[in-house]
Image 1: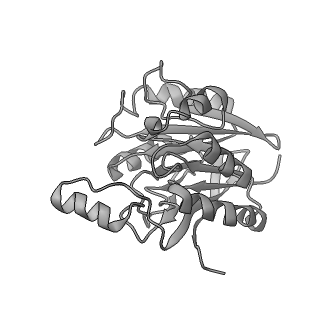
Image 2: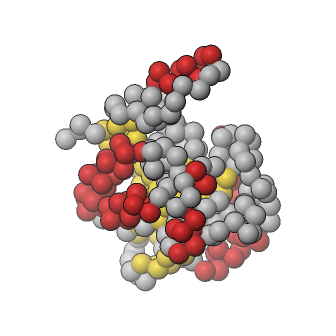
Image 3: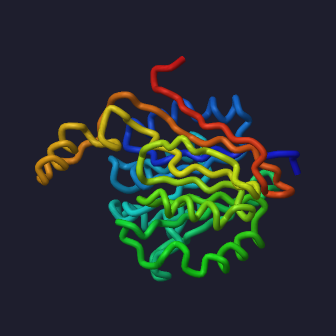
Length: 265
């Protein structure tokens, strides 16, 4: 087993602009930083709403190992096939057991077992159960089947993300927040060795309102009327959290927030 492994966590990949920058930049990132494992949130990949097979395969081909999801899980019905047939695609764990797919996966790569876990928050989110329901039981199970554990907490409230980080501190290698599409400045290694960030940030167009064309989003918010939904195009950026982890202890020993702009050399 290597002295350390390097994991990259990418926030919500939004539409074609998000996919494009991942396809163009991720292979070089993997090479430059010797990244061993990549996790990305995929709930906005297909036109900003949901995930389909074609878009998932584009990201896997670019180097993503696991795609997590969130409240837009069922916006594209092709997700059902992915959830049932591809262990690289997971959905929030705190959904009804009859929901297709799983809230976690374990991928073995270069003799390291990577567990990826997905939860959805309760505040302003269409959850079935609290993300903290039977959490101790879930933590014990995941620790027993993995060397490295990465948790995506897809939530609206920063407080819920923060609490999830403390719940997993010393038990997961990384807890990263997604959903708000706004990168936070609080990346840190918690007291017991877990890398944490409240929201890693959207990978997609920032000349927008969280990925959507400004005029459409502004009209809806200012006047309470829907005026279409279209993915924006300008100021495309990739945001990620890079974590160097000791696989023997599962603790993170070094972190770096990655920011790449589309036109940057």
